[in-house]
Amino acid sequence: NATANIGESIDYTITGIDPGAGIMTKTEEVIKEYGLDEYSLQTSSGATMTKALETAIENEEPIVVTGWQPHWMFTKFEIKYLEDPKGVYGESETINTMVRKGLEEEMPSAYTVLDQFNWSLEQMGEVMLDVQEGTDIEDASRAWVDENQELVSEWTEGAEPVEGKEIELLYVTWVSEVASTNVLKTVLEDMGFNVTITSLQPQFMFSGLAEGDGDGMVAAWLPVTHGQYMEQFGDQIVDLGPNLEGASTGLAVPSYMDIDSIEDLKA
Ligand code: PBE
Image (cartoon, rainbow, N blue to C red; front, side, top):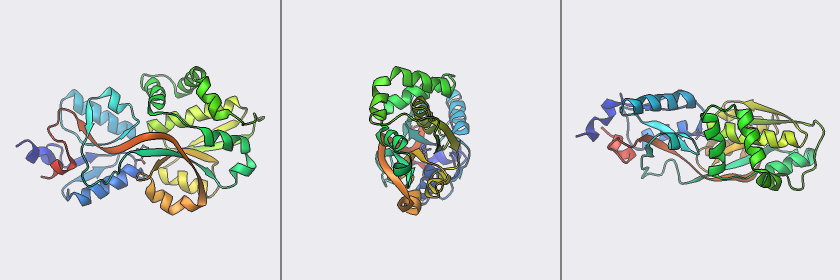
């Protein structure tokens, strides 16, 4: 039957993303928990993974990838999550804002904006889609901020403008975090900040804030995806709570694949 040959048809390979991503650790856990002993998780990058997905779909071939939402892959392609009856990837997640200790006292204006930054899956999706369609991220952020001044004014309420004060935001170049970090950069620049955004490997977003190497970040996926980093660094950084709700992660496959659950990957 079709299911029995799934593993073989994809060379027992799950197409992953960058090492250090929470979804990579969780997928290694999935391989163990579900007894997918013959499988290996291939390391790549978000861009390489979505390219492999696109190519597979063009050829109607099977593929299993590490997927997440918000991401344009769920709008551009007909794909579905595989059910995760053991709950390794957890339920719906929030994306939280984190800052370094001392930011509230030293940069109250920036702290206020970071604390009040909050948007929806749909709003982040608008920026991602614009970028996916070829708009430069700087232009996409500018346009989005201009079109959403009412929401932006809720983020900046009570925050005093500054004159060229330096601030550094840490992020990872996942499309979702590229969108949020750049939108926030635009908002802070409009307030007079001189904003540096620094892209790093995931663990350094957390260790960087813990060591005071950066001022803030808006890319902590909780409780599951970045749970390991919070265990390690949580008490050395300040969690300002969710800036987005309803995020999720899991294994994703093209809709035409005749399987529904991670269990079905077993040979
Ligand atoms: N992601 C996107 C990240 C968090 C944001 C799901 C690829 C991760 O797995 O760490």
